[in-house]
Amino acid sequence: MVPRFLVIDDFLPGPLLKAIERQARDNRAGLELNDFGGDPKEGFYSARRRVWVRKAGLGPLTEAFEAVVMEHFSALCTGTGVPPFAMARIEHEVCEQRDGSYFARHIDTDTREPARASTSDRIISAVFYLPCEPHGFSGGELLLHPFAGPSAPARIAPWRNRLVAFASFAIHEVTAVATRDERFENARLSINCWLHRARGAKPEKMG
Image 1 (cartoon, rainbow, N blue to C red):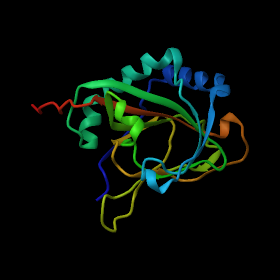
Image 2: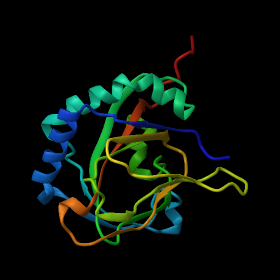
Image 3: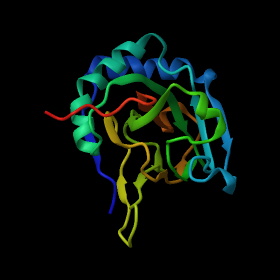
Image 4: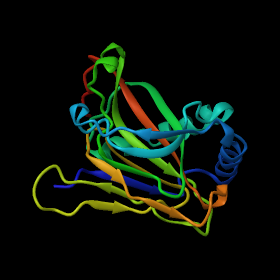
């Protein structure tokens, strides 16, 4: 069975979408290459990946972006099958995938030693796509793999102004990206975000 997921198209209003795109374009120098992982001892969390990431995120636009996410919080819980919970924080990063980028099969919940000191856990994962149109790349689909059985994975295309959400424990991957060149206009640009619940907190009661 494939994990439940939610797709929301036209997620951001036009002015905010353009402002975030400018922010990402003007801060490309802050992107760092993540090209590592794959240690079998680390399990599904430490999968092989090759992506450019800016942990500083959206800077002055963070509050505006997170406000839109929170407007959809109820729908995100319902669509992913996650019981509503008190939000501890929203973690996010800007991610640029260029020619040869990929992210092998993995989960977003970290059970390794460094994560044990955290005060919150990732509960819902969401990816917001804002590549330029027309796309200057191929590939880069999000695959959500079934928990068990022979079912084929769900495949979600990275369309501009689309947000896709799923439970953070769901197994997923990003297929390899191919681009014509390294220009910004040809990258698969996204914002990866995680909705956290305070560690030890219980889901809120429905109704």
